[in-house]
Image (cartoon, rainbow, N blue to C red; front, side, top):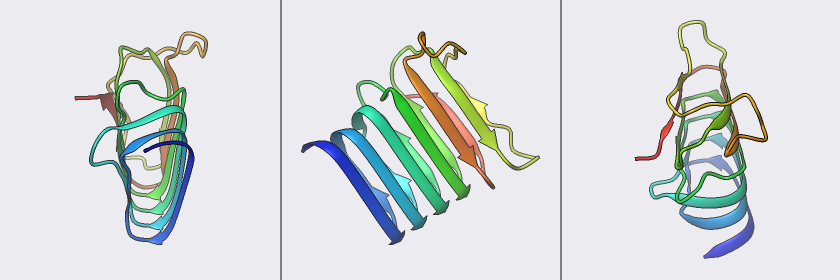
Length: 130
């Protein structure tokens, strides 16, 4: 189904999405935000997890704005398209350096998407969609 605005909240368990929407917002206390299949988001994707991973594969084109934050867990984002992407990736652990494998820019006007990924304890991988 093609939705305008999808808001998903869960206090326990996984939020698993497929399909398409203009805006997707996910909030999870304990669990994961995972897309088993590519998800199409036209404008904005936001995932906020307290204890769990974020692993999302975007289909067709990455949304203009992506924000993925987890307090305890890993963030993996698979971005389609040639980019470049304006990426801010912050891992608040001294032994984890974010692994950004997509073309980058510091110019918001030039960016295909603006991506903010943050984890308090875990790894960050931002890679081209397979």
